[in-house]
Image (cartoon, rainbow, N blue to C red; front, side):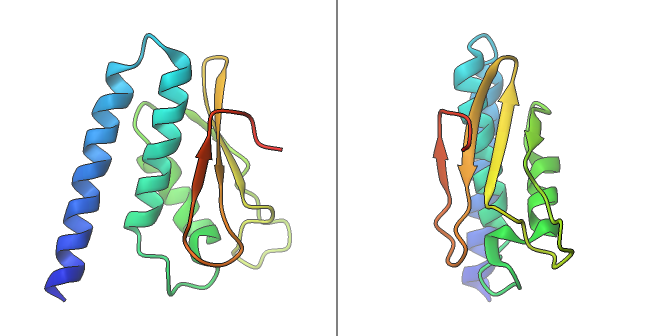
Length: 120
């Protein structure tokens, strides 16, 4: 129990650090898009979605991560067309200005990848 609380606190601190980096990189949109995507990823991982239905693709967790992402970037690609509570394709884009980063969510497991390019 203590380990889980410590993990949540530690990940929360990491999110704050990434948020500070995102703010510091405001002049460089590409760095900010990447930093925003990394903050999204860390927020998602902090939600401990390992045992939840849908894992890191769970719509509720994705929407919460989008809300938590600092700097209010445009987060797109969260979709649940069949209403099962799980993201359809596992691709989420974080856009800042004309720059974009892609968050790739696995069908199973919790290894979330971030790239400096548009998804697709």
